Figure (cartoon, rainbow, N blue to C red):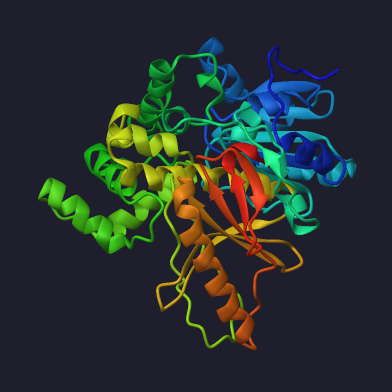
Length: 427
């Protein structure tokens, strides 16, 4: 009998976790705090140890530090929640798995990538890793799931209706984000959740991750610069200049790199890597990653962008809408082993989202807010495919699609390009 919490919403990661528990001795679920890792783990756990329980002056953490092997016994799968508070638990779990050779013994959850100091082994082959993000629109019930991303690669898209939203409704979903704690709140209250999240990160998490003191003011400036450059390819030097303009005090290369690394370890930001269709191709492609917050609500909260402000600044909202789509695409793609990239070559041709399957097949997707932008997006996709098809060393995409925000249905155009509302998509 599992420890499933009352009111638990099914998550896409549930199937992956169940599968991995049948393959590996332990599974580690990583991702930002408040995204639902603990509840997802409890849904498949039969016993639990909360390392960060504050009772009795954090007695659980102290016990784990004194003797990690004392906290591991319990009915399997046993959840060790916030294991990174005591990094030595990793080696203790790995050792136990090695000794017993049993599968599905432990689930580890953590909201920060721990400092590897003190950890002797990687856990390869014993501890599998799963990445969990805030909820996608399908998980929150804001997409009806009438179009499967995975199935697009195996069968033609059939016309499908979507959950039709107004522009105001779409913006509200972006500002709310995918935080499970936001559901059931009105729009105004839900917008406060990512604001409080960022406050907690700045006042607590950036110090706790490795015990190093960092300048909260400069970290705040960096977050604002990242938010202004959401869904773009922006260099560290550009971030530095942006911070200098706002503050008047220079910040060093190493400091910016360190602060970005901390934000990645806390799963606040996540890069979207560049795609190269063939390393030997004569087409020169960019290798810089796009910058994204793990959830677009964090970008909106950083800028103080209310739904009303974004409604009057659709250029800014367009980047946040793209970020929301990339968040969902990554969640969906992870479920069937695919990866999400972006593409840009030296001629300025771009693809917002490249979905690559494990066997190397890939699809090209443009992301557009309105239906009036679909024609231009489809034309650009067809031009890129033609260019790649004509290059003997490039592999052309198997399918083309435009993911849109304001649409009534998904369908295939006469030119073969698919139109896919984000409110119709699922894994």
